[in-house]
Image (cartoon, rainbow, N blue to C red; front, side, top):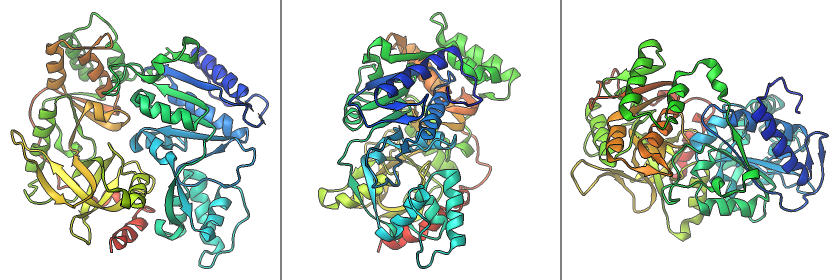
Length: 510
């Protein structure tokens, strides 16, 4: 199929062939490497499977085959002006964190929101972008030597990020990006990961932009809150739903996936499942039967809860053990972006912040106050250019109190909730090396007996929470918080090349 050494399972091979046929109908022949002008809409297809079934592997192999056939990959950081009869592919995810998971596998993914907006490059530095993308000769630009350009090209070859490559060359975002514009032309082929998170409005927007759309989703996830328990791919005709059944990562004897897939047993009750977790923890260190929430993890990997009251209680406990003052944030405290509150006249600033990753649900680390009152310096987790400075409205809710504590209260700007604990719904699309799940909340859902889309809600919650863990799962069974082993830190976030962006962003406040 692709000449790769990857060995597909039967269901993966069938799915690959079905997507290949969809693309052939659209004028992209992967078998012969032939590209023809678009032939109109080919429609939507979905690759569906639970965690470990090989969806991401299949997406990566399809991307490689398209790139080898000459299809141009369109990312959120640069897009060539050469549009004549070209065929393009964009790989999207609903959140920065989900996109970063794909980028770590060598797949140049970006967020859905970012692809709606394109950066406007300074004409001089656009020559560098075209050269990096393989569409022009090496440019001669004052201040950029051949050695510097070679370093930028080496970075781009590995990371597929033009802003990152330009940062390696000593340039800052404000040097080469002059603004942002809403996309006014449709694209071609779109792959969407974590498609279970899409709501109907987002799905309609994507169908307007992409005549050829392939969704990759997990039917066992939690549906968007406004979707009545259904996912957008469930409405597709059966021939357009490609189901992956084999659990590929089981070959690595993954106990976390064993637990996740055990939840499919209709006879399994909550108590039986907890015994299964405890038994697994005794024989495998990748699963931990936790007697307390590990506070050291919460700054980078939030505690996953179901109830909002639990979230608020854990956040305040986290702040208390670190001695956080009532009237300010400590550098290193985690935040979750809750949206932007900016009027229409500040549309350009909104586009800039959203394109940099400050979209609803983004995980952010507070670095310190900005130069102007109400501004914060922030690190956006998973973003390609993560360090920004923005006017901020930070809300920290208090247990049993109606009025929240607001350490930053700009008149307008990016709004944040504290991020030491998040609901399992908000955690969808993210993964962490270690995830800790607050089991008393899952038990509360089990006692309520709620059902969603024909399955007990507690099982959906447990499945989503468990599959956020890449390497280690901590199943926390007691309402306790461990003591921290060190102070909150931010030095681990200030690594090259993104540290080059920080000075410019703070200067931009003035």
